[in-house]
Length: 183
Image (cartoon, rainbow, N blue to C red; front, side, top):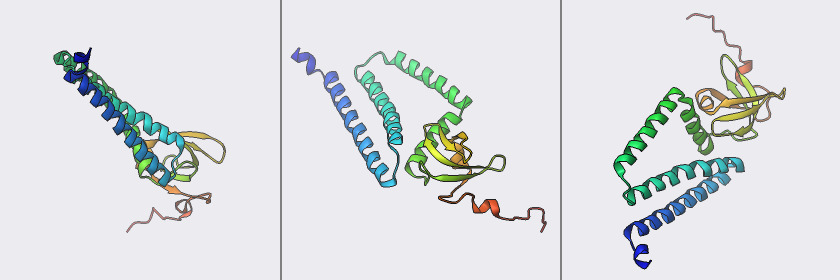
């Protein structure tokens, strides 16, 4: 039994698992500190924990498979096939990946937070609402009329957005711009 525990594969597996656990905990701790500083909700922290956990532990599992020397030819074919299928799915629906990325950007660096009253400046469908929740793919908005709107996170980064605070409308709504005038 002792010889089995001293095998390099067992030691490397334990080192990878412990290292992954420590790195995961450090990322969660760092994100929690940042969240406190920028006033993010508890639900947003849970999303971050879940998504980073998926990525970090998947990398750990792949590393352990490689350490144990499982037939890598078949492994690389299976991994390549999986990435090809996922790549085609994401290319067919690119907004999934862009919404997840936008969610992380909104979490860490953008000025919107839950409870903010915002105005989305969209020519076709302008929206004035309060942010109810920011999820992994979309943001929940509640209008003055009580209508609940799910707005894709990537569009929040692409459209102009005003934070209204206590105001009912944006200054852009009342601006009288003459667009018919030619120079």
